[in-house]
Amino acid sequence: MADTLECLETETGDNPQMSVIWLHGLGADANDFAPIVPMLTLNRATRFVFPNAPMRPVTINGGMEMRAWYDIDLSNPLVGADDIRESSQALASVVEREESRGMKPSQIVVAGFSQGGVIASHLGLRHTDALAGILALSTYVHDVENLTNEISFASIDVPIFMAHGLQDPVLPIARAVGAREALLELGYKLEWHEYAMGHEVNAAEIADISNWFNSLGA
Image (tube, rainbow, N blue to C red; front, side):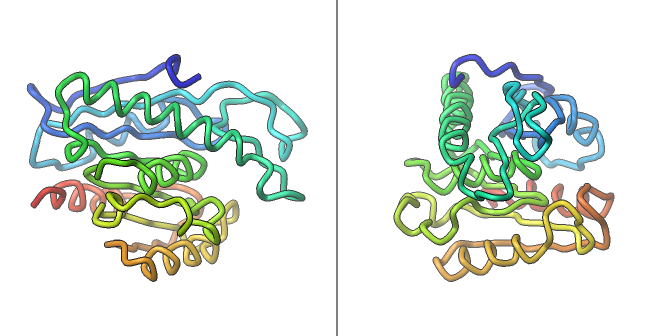
């Protein structure tokens, strides 16, 4: 899968100075966050890359096949561990492709919503080169209890943006708060936001994401 992810791309200007690789959530596709790009107010030309997750059966949805970065089984929270590692490697391949197109690791953001955020944080915290940032929206950190055994030294200075809805019925905010506290305890530079919303993105969050993007490398 690592070499075969389909990606949708858009650039906000000529000669992009930053790449954002943005992963969608369960059952969505590469088009899910593309409409947000024109809503962002950015201070540099940016290439947005939206990969498609592969189709796979998802236990929580009765085994129905859909685009998913990993399987979910509420009776076994770690059931998707192998899928998460595989999807993280697929994301790493997209990062490497951006590097081959002239982007330094310090110009590449890995981003994701819900399931996509799990994969973005999984790779960003383990990547051997420091990336520009990790954008984790309405999500959590997989197997956070064992994170100290796997994080890379390079990742400790990578800025992290975490945001969550106070009324999220899909991923309760407590799970994200637990991840936030674990990352802060490890010394990560984390910017936290919470909003009066469910499992979604709103205008205030988009404005905060714009400001965070603009702060990277400053």
